Length: 262
Image 1 (cartoon, rainbow, N blue to C red):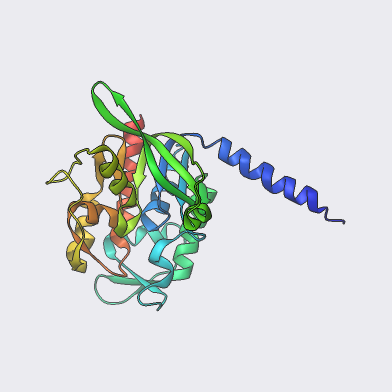
Image 2: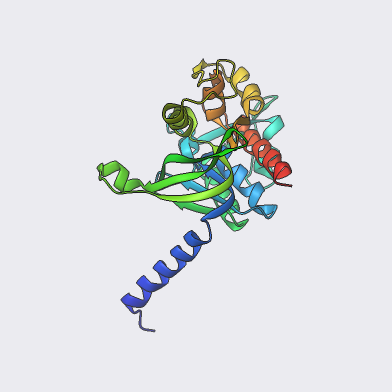
């Protein structure tokens, strides 16, 4: 069978832009394709919520691929292991509360399950700003301003595009890039003790794992914070190559948003 190059191009362009056009108005827009973002996307899409995830890098998964120091084994604890077992990732018990999994198997499975559940995943797309609206005297996040990651990396002056969403999730990890832009451009107060980004503290795995789900909440109207970004926003510790708290964070964010969407 002949492969026509022009037809191949047409198939790619048609498929991509059909997906993109269908994502201009979303229930939930997730920024960051790490374990928290992928887990939230999987749950929301499986519940019928129109969900898209935007990842600036070529690959999704965040730091999960590399385990610890490129030793590609990850750790989860008892409370969170169901979030890997439920999607078919094999786990091995190591000690009373520690389970290990192959990092590549875990990451690829989380990404696959999110996509197959119906989440639209856009890699190589950077979020450079948010859309805000004034409603009843309250400023609210109402969408994302997106651009091509290669355009951003090259420093080209190319205008972005916009998608609208009923809720957004900041899951960009340590750098809390969405929150930094929101605060810098609008001078708003966040739902944190000091009203701003409190900053990430040094390593304390046990405390960080407990507080990552606790810190997962609506940090500004229309904007939830999840994963390591939650701890960085609320001034808590980092946890290293333990991923249970981030998985639980994604699940919690999804459940709260799903309930609020009605």
